[in-house]
Image (cartoon, rainbow, N blue to C red; front, side, top):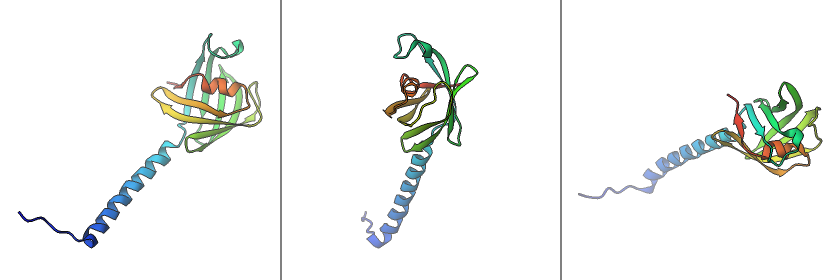
Length: 142
């Protein structure tokens, strides 16, 4: 059997087409994974957590697809704000008062986990946010 000989001018266009398809697919996956999943997430703070006694109990974080969030404690809205995604970082800014409202922007790394969302503080001068976002993963509300 004789080996097949191909010229670079014949192979190069096919290789470029294949490479373009791989890059486009990879970019589409990156942009879709950089969107914070909207919905409601539950956090249950327990005694023994690094949280003040008044924070113990169930909290709900609601994220909408338009870039707004709100923290609820039961039926009470504790704070509302806006978020913006930059790759694997979320920026949070409170805009409507409540007991948890703070000035300044909180920066957190975020990623999805099987039960919901996980956040890790990068920088935040707001006392309550790191407790609520950084104690443990938030579970998607069912």
